[in-house]
Amino acid sequence: MNIQFRNNMPFFEGVSINEITHSCNTPFYIYSQKIITDTYKVLQDSLSSEIFFAVKANPNQAILKLMKNCGAGADVVSIGEMHRALNVGFHPNKIIFEGVGKSKEDIEYAVEKNIRLINVESIGELGLVNQIGKNFNKIINVGVRLNPDIDGQTLDKISTGKKTDKFGIPLHQLKNIISLMQTYNYISLKGISCHVGSQIHDISIFEKIFETMKDAAEIALSSGIELEHVDLGGGFGVNYEKDQNEININDLKKLIVKFFNDVPYKISFEPGRYLVAKSGIIITKILTTKENGGINFLITDAGMQTLIRPAMYGAQHRIEVLNDISKKDVRYTVAGPICESSDTLAKNIILPEQKINNYLVIYDTGAYGATMASNYNSRGIPAEVLVNESEFFIIHKEEKIFDIIKRDSIPNWL
Image (tube, rainbow, N blue to C red; front, side, top):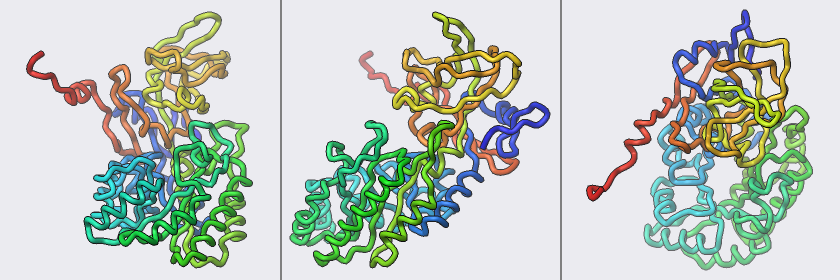
């Protein structure tokens, strides 16, 4: 959803941006409830499968409550995310615990809460879960996350399904895993899963995933496993740039029918970015303008501490102006206030000529924005705002420097 203008005043889903700036200091995040609910409904109607929201994409309690109300489950990758999901009322049977580095205490907590599945990612973890089951005198439902050695043709930093990635158990070890598990008395294999990476735009990759997982499920079934769940991951590509192709959900639906039309188990997906990325924007203020070496810089109060994706992944987000639209266009590099040369939000973009205290909007920041924000340079985490038609609500208050300082302790010998 683009910013709308009424009498030259910017609005987002019926809410005045200027009104929000009176309640929140810039930078701040805004999320559209309508975009999230509409996106979820389209995905649910198209896939006709169970959906588990990848909490890491946006773990704000209001967003999780919204996902729960939509009917989603929760895909968590840490004990902290599990606490968040349980806190907003997700039923334990709607929570799946992923993660390549679960501690003994993490697994014990998941067992105590009776969540649906713990997806193990190594042979060592399998043995640990069995031992915990013995200690609890309880049979634990597990899934096995498989590494299918499929290249998602995405950035190396967000690839999770190649044999050189740290995630999952190699697919060729599945039969050995099943044999090993049959010697364990406190584990019940209920599912298999995989996830090959984020930002997948090529439908043929999903065809490979579906075919591979269908074959893996057949191996499990033929080994006497009463398989109940096959999780096909997420990674549905989101269009951040105008010339980028977005994954066609109807094509995914056709593949589901092709491979899983008549199977004795349920299939599920674990999207995160796809459900929330388009719902979010960042509003940032221009602190100064300057020219260095022939480059026109706009220095904003949002930077890599607010949105790290450009610095970490080289990602590009669309940026537009909110006020004082000049007839003169200028080629700008938009950079943040952080003392790092990598703190650049966009390079060589054309905007109407800008001045200090003007506002910019950064689009498609509902996923991996606030959740990856930091206190670098002792800057507070910005406020988060949820808008619903003509209303807005601050769902995360701006963090002040004194909040950060209070977290530190000074020993008595200093």
